[in-house]
Image (tube, rainbow, N blue to C red; front, side, top):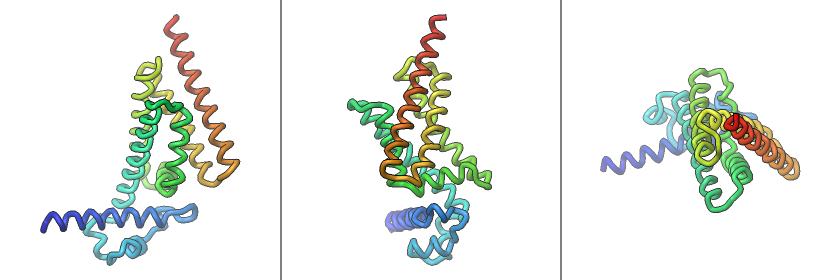
Length: 205
């Protein structure tokens, strides 16, 4: 019986997380959410919320963790596509844009709380972005001439560029979105080409 209760508790906890994400929008940030609204959408009484989270801040930090995990899982899928013969940059950019299309509110949360007023939220988002950069850096170190230091610098530049493009992509579609994707692909090519040329030149010295 305890196993059934544990499963139900986890299901309700996830329902609260999804309810909170569903209420985010371009005009409705996490700070605008109320515990009552989230509980109502999740189908539970407001008092039951506290069985799953200490307060709204704990819910928000859990949402940041989930958004970061979703993004990292998608980019791992992208690397598997690349291993099957896909273009590294094209596949990565397209996969990131899929994340924005399919999980726009998760990306909005990362974007807003990265520079929000809560120190705990800023630290949580910074940690997720750092995880993302490190995974990309490890990949670059294994697949390019870059050593660990140069791979990290390159990964950080690429992630910053893609996050900025993602923020722009939230508000555009159609031809404008296609033009943005093309521009980002070229910008990433410039970064990777420059990094490779720099490392090769440094090794010759």
